[in-house]
Image 1 (cartoon, rainbow, N blue to C red):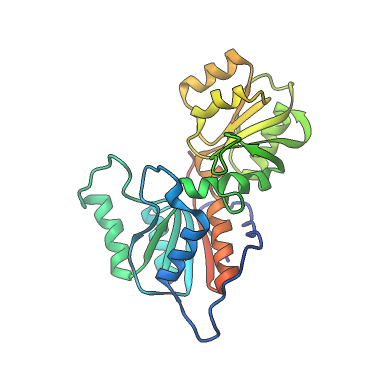
Image 2 (cartoon, helix red, strand yellow; image 1 turned 60 degrees about the horizontal axis):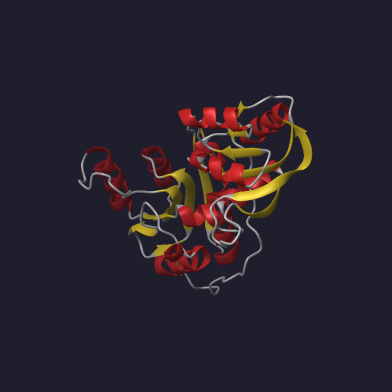
Length: 279
């Protein structure tokens, strides 16, 4: 199911046909079974991350409806309450490295909402970026029609970013228009608009710092979600084309694919809720 909040976004992609584990006809899916299945799929122990992956806030023990979204903001929590969700699954959860540990203000309100309504919160950050079938980067490739050839770190099966090519070469200006139309977010391009591009590396979210790694791979262009001030100069001075397509806009698809996989594998309900974010 697809639920819109504030702004229309592209239709949810369907998850690949991974192994099905449907419970028996009268069997309820438990929180712990759901947690184990996602951990087995995403392998969070293989990543050094900036936050805990998996179950972040414990709610009720049985799960029938899962709401997915990019970030566990208050607006998503409130919408999940309306949807009578048993669990929320996000890419950006809580308890980030170096954040204030005190449960006050905004954090207190968010946790209170989850606990009062018995809603489980699951969050997967880098493991969801990297997964080769339901990950953010491969899901973005499907949206943009990019052909995946390897990871940005070719010898690492858990490489975060990917390398590939466009299905057909086009000018940089044409690709920027294509990305804008598909993602519903204006693509910022650094480079000569009439240059032809074909090979590309990409990493969703705040991955602008990987531009040097992309350049070392010899690709025509690099795409990420956010841009920072130095990124502009790197692109201009080295000749690599750079596209910033939105942190939120580029990271909407992995969590949808994972939610669809859960729905297909376990027969539970999945509702994606998009809380608009211009960044």
